[in-house]
Image 1 (cartoon, rainbow, N blue to C red):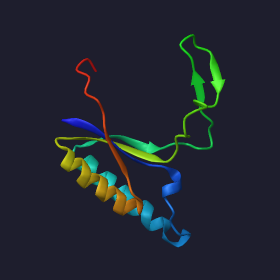
Image 2 (cartoon, one colour):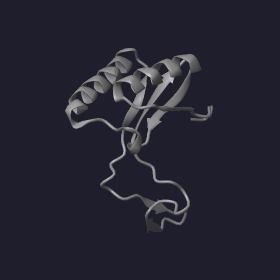
Image 3 (cartoon, rainbow, N blue to C red):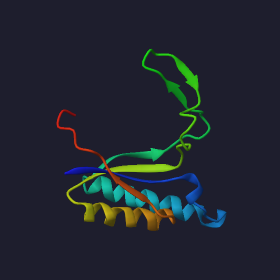
Image 4 (tube, rainbow, N blue to C red):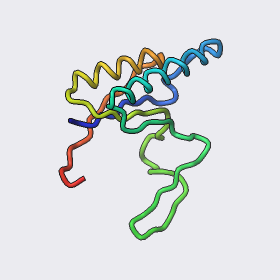
Length: 113
């Protein structure tokens, strides 16, 4: 089985205030289904109120992330699934619940981890 990252940037989630409660309810329901199916690994949203820091190999800390990279924000879910087709199906369920497209990526398998 492979682990898949299903994610979206904050800017992709444009939901009217009147529909926000429904989005929260439906997205939590999909995650509950993933947990019940035994495929949920981890998920959450980036806390955008806390600025990132860049930690170097020598342990020094610099405020901010990589200056050349786009900011990392939004929400993500990691699921462990048998096939890419299963991952696409779960991403579609999450997209419907969150009302925004989801980016799907697979983690490289490392037998030592």
